[in-house]
Amino acid sequence: MFLYLFQIWMATLLTLMPKQSNEICSQTNTAFNSGEKITYTIFYNVIGLYVHAGDAQFAVSPSKWEGEPALALTATGNSNRRYDWIFKVRDKYESIVDSKTLLPYYFSRSINEGSFHQNQNLRFNQKTNHVVTQKGESYKTADCTFDVISAVYAVRNLDFQHLEVNEKVYLNFFLDNELFPSYFKYLGKEIVRTKFGKFKAIKIAPLLVKGSMFEGGERMTIWVTDDENHIPIRIETPIIVGSIKVDMKSYEGLRYPLSSLIEVE
Image (cartoon, rainbow, N blue to C red):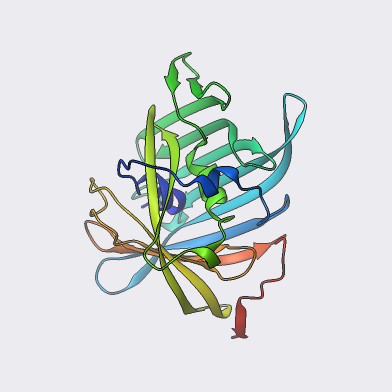
């Protein structure tokens, strides 16, 4: 069982929608810096007990693209080695993005899940609204198109203070040779208890398309810290059999103090 952190969060939250938020396309990065690293534990629940199914790590490092400053956003996922004999996962995603707008120049993913293996490379041209695959295939995109990793980091920069409860935020991203106009819904604020203590959190819900693993509808919930970092601290979602919970395991290199942590365990 793989840790589907960003695939749960972004790659399966799609539905075709008619518009896109101008806010997410005109913003600049103020939520994180190079050097940030966040790790997560993925739990699978099928009979009322949570089993440690895998781990994920998201990291930000300095990079360059055609001589200009850029950021490398890397996400890796591994199944729990105790269960590799059942289903082994070793996945890696990387996005090279503009250091200010977070729009991607380049995206790659290496998927190794059981007997399934896939490698993909994409080059984005944000000026002409095209993306080119490693096979030389060209696809039309749209203004302000992300990949699944850069989209996650772009959402962290939203000004949630100016959103109404149940308001939707739209964005485009490209995956599997297809452009997805997508959205998530802002659900308000809550206090969330974690192993670190109690957090003031912002609650959001993406719209899932029913598939082989996920049930459709707005049934996934994501909590991010209610501070300037906006780091995801918990994700919960039902799947076709059982449910998945993703919890933050460790963090380092945050841009701001973790002021949303209001009570330490």
